[in-house]
Length: 51
Image 1 (cartoon, helix red, strand yellow):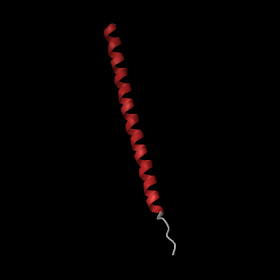
Image 2 (cartoon, one colour):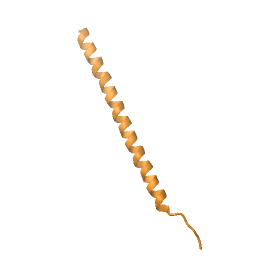
Image 3 (cartoon, rainbow, N blue to C red):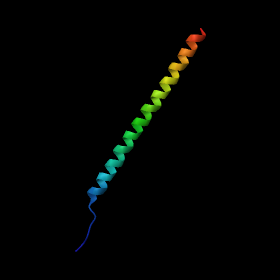
Image 4 (cartoon, rainbow, N blue to C red):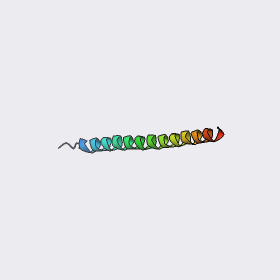
C-alpha cells in the first residue's frame, strides 16, 4: 500500500499565500498613497500661505 500526500492542502495553502500577499500589497499601497496625498496637500497649503 502506498501513502501519498493530498495535493489539495498545498493548493489551498498556495492560494491563501497568494491572496493574502495580494491583499497586503493593496493595503500597503493604499496607505502609502494616502500619506503621499496628505504631504502634497500640506505643501499646497504652505505655498498658499506664502503668497
